[in-house]
Image (spheres, rainbow, N blue to C red):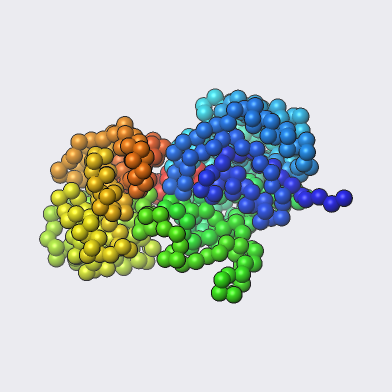
Length: 512
């Protein structure tokens, strides 16, 4: 009698399809493995961020696992996001009833946007009960630091120290993923116990230049499970999975899905006949953006989640500030020069546009619609006292990005009705980069506006602005904003380029 090689994923659901059990199933299928699922939680998320997590009752999770494993021959199990201690206990109890041949645990703790995906009481249960029964644990660098209870620098010089601390928890094998570390090449470190000895292997790969990193951690761990299910030894399974992920990243690097961090191309290695009769190596049908379904947000690319607003200081010019933001990884520049005349703004814009084009960045000009059109900018940002959005739209057309400034829900509603593509909403707190400051919103102000937006069916990207620092990002993104705009906090840093890299890393954290 024949059967499929099979794997079970125990993980959360991602409705946008790029991470969680959806990514796991795609990976299993791409690698020739039949996939089954046990859902631990339903997340409300998209490529921009996680808005809400609803865990399932622990008994429901337990019953899913046992029901599948008493019926289907499961060759490997992958565990992803588990939100709470009770569910972790239920999973361990279920796996004691039906012990898997191979178990990989991906300790998902934080989302892309910094939203916590694990309750505080769950960490101890994970360390004491789940990790010791795993054949492999695959934390990224920040997660490894949490498991070890220590912080190390991003150069990975001290990775052996935290690895040993995690292995001391009873872990048989450990893969510390270095995607959050500094450097052009990314190194993962595989530690495999053999008696009293530990074998360490460094796995290096060139960084793929793309924002499409949603679900990479899920994809890697499920790929390891798939290769292990197919009979590969642990070291080979990890190497093959890492190559699969790198190739999937490369294949999906130029594809636009959503307004945040898009997914990898899981099915890159499958032939697919396109409508033009040509066969291309992708199971996904790839079409031009103008032929695709639009949501009303199509003018805003993925880079809307991080914007830099130019400013000048005693040390830096407007151009300096933009160049440093680009070097740090920001891909949306808004040229704001409130005290300059139009000719100076135009000269500055003409110098910055080529730099933005080289980096693939969006370039938006503050206030001046006709100037923005004249120099070939991607869009314009309009303040409350500037040209109304609907009038600007008549001049610029549907493909021109038009954003507007808001401080209240009434402002948001007005801009939405006029056809704005995104809304810059603030200030979050006091800022010195804007002279006429509206009332500060704070976190509760954003939550109130976002709640009213949902109630009224308004789904425009809302970008938080005003006095925001890197440390504010997790709570703002968890509140539901689509992105953040920065200026002063970057330029006040000792090294603005490094500070921007830190922000980019904060926004990407959790997708690895």
